[in-house]
Image (cartoon, rainbow, N blue to C red; front, top):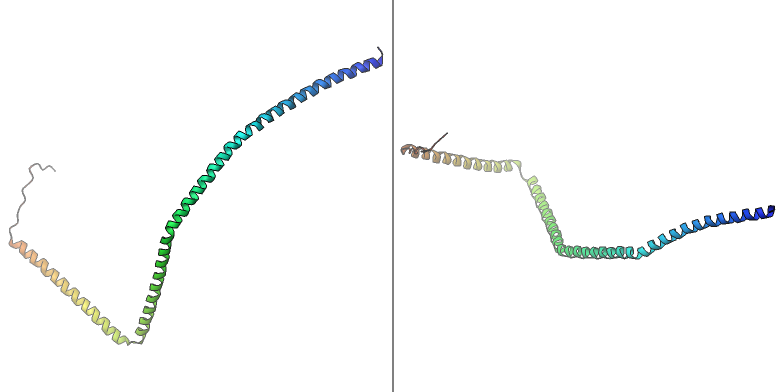
Length: 164
C-alpha cells in the first residue's frame, strides 16, 4: 500500500467519524423539532382556554358596567334633588344676608340710647320673669316641706332575709 491508499483510508475514516457526528447532531435537531411539534400541538388547547376565560371576563365586565349604569340612572334624580336643595339653600342664605344687611343699615340709623332703653326693658322683663319663677318654685317646695311635716312618717318593715 502506498501512500495514496493510506490517505484514502484516512479520508474514509474521517468521513465515517464526520457522518457519525452529523448523525448525532441531526438526531438532537430531530428531538428538538419533535418537542416543538408537541408544544405547537398543545397551543390550540391552551389558546382555547385563554380565549374562553377572556370571553368570560369581558362578559362579566359588561354585566358590571350595565349594573353600574342602572344604579347611576337610579341615583341621578337624587343628585338632581340634592342640587335643587343646594340651590334653594343658597337662595335662602342670600336672602337672609340681604335681610340682615338691611336690618343692620336700619340699626345704624337708630339712636343708641333708644336701643339701650329697649334692651333694658327686655332685660328687666326677663329678670322679673326669672325672679317670679324662682319665688314660685321656692313657695311650692316650702308647701311640700310643710305638708310632709304635718303627716306622720311611715316606717318600712325590715326585710326578713336581709344579709349585708
